[in-house]
Length: 201
Image (cartoon, rainbow, N blue to C red; front, side, top):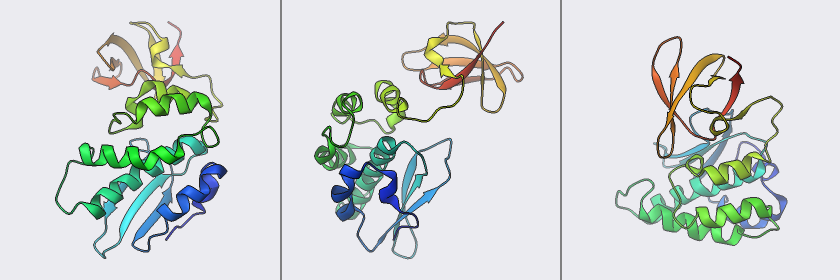
């Protein structure tokens, strides 16, 4: 059961591959407003149904990747009765096998495809952890702002994020940046590809 025309949100060349994956009667796919903390999720409902919730976004390539990511969770739950780690070996193998038929340049532009091929060799729990893939996908977002990536700033620079909050770039860790919110003094971890608005000192 689909509450929105899901096929309108994915590349046309992927339609015939996706249709059989979403046609099961016990699976409900729900399209919702964008959530900051996640692109999608899967959960088992009490009535015996299973539900995948996906953010309604304009980037059809990101949406398709998220859809397959969550469908892999559903397939693992359906086929493996014992409790397993959400993003463990079973999910990684299932996600990779489900994504393979989509890995062609009729569905994905080459700049995304090349990153996606590397990504699924050992997929992380979130696509946002793969900064190279995020940058490639972001090229197909419809940004209308003057924001840049956090990793384009130097240490001790100021930036605005999340409804006007001001942060100071403190230092880079292995994969993330430690930044301090000036009003509270609290420290936060940021992805290097977080889109932020730089502030001139």
